[in-house]
Image (tube, rainbow, N blue to C red; front, side, top):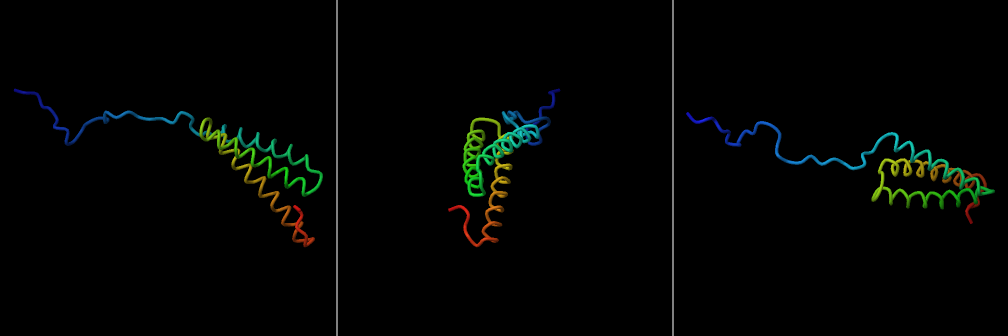
Length: 113
């Protein structure tokens, strides 16, 4: 008697395909590291401005540089750190925009020029 050989219509077991894994999975520690570094970066640059105008411009410049680093990290490095950078940069820009808008609202004069 011949042994039973499955036809392949109903496969049993795992498929013979490879399993691909991400080389740099996003982790909470990486996000926290990016967020911590970017917070320090934005605070240091924000302290360079002696007025609201200086603070806003320095924050915009520091945020743009941080975003360039985040884009490089997304492509060539750790996406978790890039995520932390992007989140904190957006928050820092929002704080600067709110401060500029509040000054504009109270004085009626655009503070960035």
